[in-house]
Image 1 (cartoon, rainbow, N blue to C red):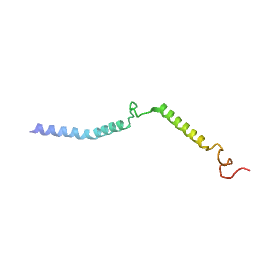
Image 2 (tube, one colour):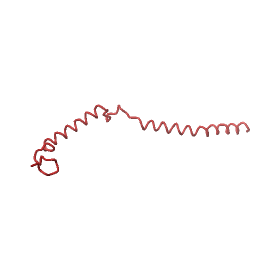
Image 3 (spheres, helix red, strand yellow):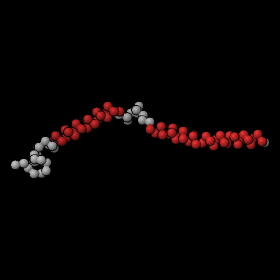
Image 4 (cartoon, one colour):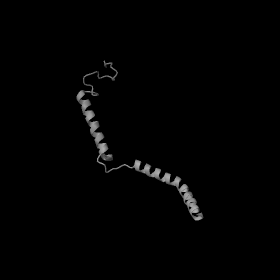
Length: 87
C-alpha cells in the first residue's frame, strides 16, 4: 500500500509539472498550422500571377477610361479640371 501511494504521488507530480509546457507546445503547434500557407492549393495564385492579374485589371481600366473619354480632354472642359473652361 505504501509503494502504491508513493507511485501515485510521484506520477501526479510529474504530470502537474508537464501540463504547462505541454499546453504551450500544443498552442504553438496550432499557431504554426494556422500560419501555414498552402502554396500547392489551386486557389493560391502566387506572386507573379498576382502581379500579372493586377496588370491586366489596370490595363482594362485604362482601356475603359479611354473608351469613355475620361482624362484625355474629350467631351468636356479641357481646362484645369475644375469645371472652368480655358479662354
